[in-house]
Length: 422
Image (tube, rainbow, N blue to C red; front, side, top):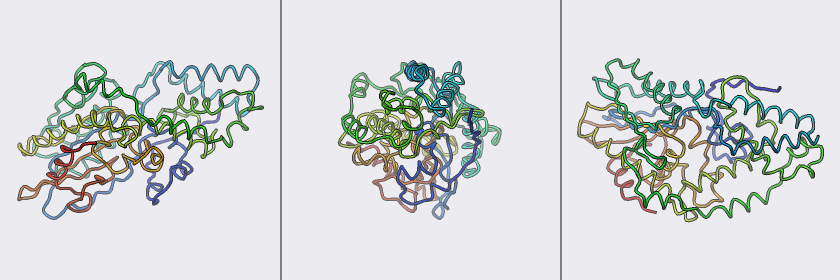
């Protein structure tokens, strides 16, 4: 069985290239085509000097859980039946037979784990915490407390525990406050401290209008490698494009898993991977992005609710100096993505579905372990600045003028978020 052992390597080279297209990025690292299950790598760990006279005093962190095993959803099983049927009919080439064995192996390694955090995922969280403490040590002084909010999903709780374990070891007198609840699946109380109303939940379930764009784009492309290399006679293999899409979906966590795993991406050309990724990425935009095409429904509800909770925390930290070092929230990609879109973090939104591939990419926004950090600074006059970081890279709030560099006046940011309408 052909396999590749992936270790935790923080390669930053391709992020430094200007204005790369999605295809160019996927050619550089085919794993990017696995989108929201692309394993975490910090985009940048550099910290710019704060404006003169300002010192960090508080951090608000919203993190997705780390790399995980796949879930055992029944939607993953039809592709196994399709592959077995093709195998039994003798339609696979030798490479096709190897692909079949590799897909079976990935699913076998998933059985019984059902979305649990991998060792790699735990390591990701510890390393993020290490860097947070290293870069913003002044925040964690004087016997302050850390507030944490988490869903009750085990991989999220374990991510939090690995994160705060590092901070507890670094700052023995830090006080850790744990908050979670067991509300229904539509609740945000675990990560935001509040729930959606019935009306909000009803609106949240409305469909977007980007499906037509997705299907048109899907119909326009033709695979250039996979059918010829995997099948003896592609004309007898049925809907090959959908089979390709289902194979990626059934093995999407392969690069997040522990151990020596098959290199599933190697069976596809970069061109094919880009188109398969584009279809999946557009689903993220459809659900959470903000444009005329989808009306920003999910962002306006989920993103707004979480933002309101974050603002309350910040105001409390400002009113009670020296009490709280950080508020750490741990949740899921479905929580983080609408938050980034609502806050208008650079790279989260696109003007139309056609622009999504090069302006709003899931592997840059909601990969395993993705996080948004808001670092707050104060000077002797009581002026408050905030610096946003996406995956530990200082970033911009797209439609807001900064005070300096990536530092913004908190009063401007708060006003922008509180008055945001679509």
